[in-house]
Length: 208
Image (cartoon, rainbow, N blue to C red; front, side, top):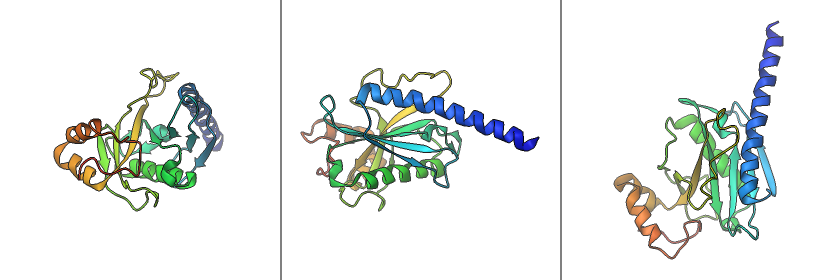
């Protein structure tokens, strides 16, 4: 009887995940076009699968995106994580391989599940050796989405799923320290007054 009940619960859990996955993926496709590939991860720290989708540059989008589906349903320190992560990157992925970038985003997801109690942006993560070797930007800023359609965050079935889409921005160590010491405003000021795109993971620092 117990085994039967567990099987039913697992099937219901899978069904709910499938609904969520479909709703979020439809949202991504609506604004970014079709993905080119995906990775499915079942790392030890995850109690649900996490998908990482790669959306390459196309005629409509001159930047690429790499985004999670399933992070939101993971059990974190304070309950469900309730967010998905999005990398917005140059078309060439900053000279890194797609595999290394996807692995890095999954490493960040593991860190969130095991170490972060409040996912509310803006927040930062210190420089890490897990970042792709080809990138000069080794720290991370977690921020509200910028440059997306104003309706992007409106996902089907949002009455069932509470999900925040968070922009994962590779930044320099000097920028990380500035945000820690002075808040996000100084970084935003220098970024907005720069001719260099924040998407460029090999750019010079906005703040030295």
